[in-house]
Image (cartoon, rainbow, N blue to C red; front, side):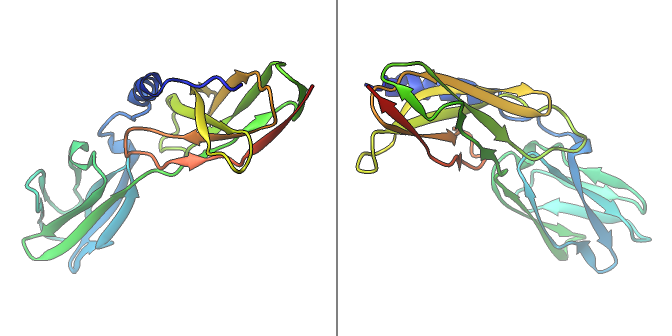
Length: 220
């Protein structure tokens, strides 16, 4: 039989792993730039993944003022200036409208960061009750400047066949290995089993991601 985590224990473990997965707030080196010109902000609508932050550069010959509709941030930029908010203003997903000089409107749109999770095994045909190591990578975009990624949670789910739903059997941490995140989980299937890995976080910062299913044939 497959050993399942109790729901409360699984949620607690995912939450603990998610707490170390959220990148630090407000780094100007991880910024994307919006130009302030005589005709307004360029681009007027800037869509960026969570964890990156907008910085405005005044490319005009007069001073410009940027004010967000929610009142969280306002900036005054002389010609040639480059400024951004602290970054904490963009910690939630959604749209952040602002005005330049009280007239021209722009919008910053924060979306979830994409990820990819893989699932592999050294064997796909084993004896009943034998130990099997499932493993894979959690791939995330490389930030600028490049820094090693922080650990992130991965949940492994399993089902006996396509007529049964996937159920979680273990939660692990995808740990930093150079510029990649790697994870592993040891299982002892007692019947033919289909596994799948899910990159899941209680934070909306990251998109959820699923691996391709992996079928393990168990013989007596």
